[in-house]
Length: 147
Image (cartoon, rainbow, N blue to C red; front, side, top):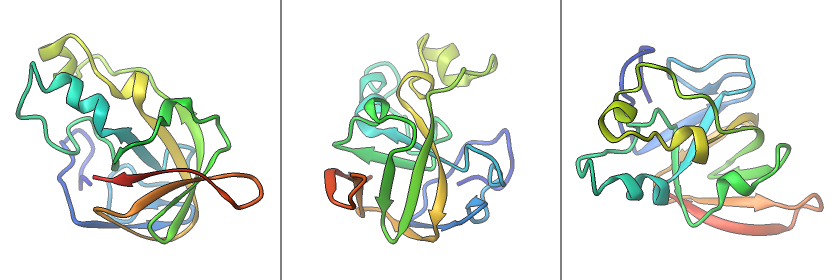
C-alpha cells in the first residue's frame, strides 16, 4: 500500500478491503472501478533478470498473486481473496509516461498482466491467503495464492 500517490507501494502482511473504497489507507482507494489492483508474481519474475531488486508493490499492485492467469479472466469474474470478495472491472491499463520501471527495462508488466477490481464484500487479505476464482454457481473454478 502507499499513503501518497506517486510513491512506491510498500509491502504489508495484510490489507483490509472495504466495499466502495478498496484498500483501507491506500492513496488510490476511492469509489471508482479500480479499487484494488492484482498482478501475477510470474510477470514480475520475468523482469528480475534486468532488475533483480524488484519488490512487491513496485508496479503499484495491491495484491501480488501466484498460480492464476489473471489477464485471462473476463470482466465480471468474481474472486475470493482472504475473507473479501472482488469483481474484476478492468484488464490491464495504459502505462503512464513517467513509469520508472518501464524506463529502466523497456517494459512494464502492469499494462499487459495486471487486473483491477471493486470490493463487493469487505474483509482482510493476508500474505499467503488463497485467491479463488468463483464460478457463477459459487463453485471454485481455479485457485492461486497471495504472495
